[in-house]
Image (cartoon, rainbow, N blue to C red):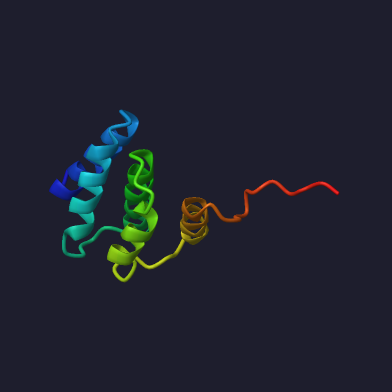
Length: 103
């Protein structure tokens, strides 16, 4: 396995153990590496995991900070709706999963 693949597997291990600080650290480390043969979809997944890790640690601005730092490098693609949902959730606003009021 390549060193980068081992790092990605380490990230998933941290997720499985709910080690949110470890997830955040490993996600940042992976995203900070020069672009390589890693698929864009995997980079976007790493970004979302970093956002969720921040939220799990009570960081009320985690999604915005991660987007600000990494969105140019990791454009919204397959997880664009998830990223929009997380922003709305962080803001306490409406999102696609909000219950509709019955009339």
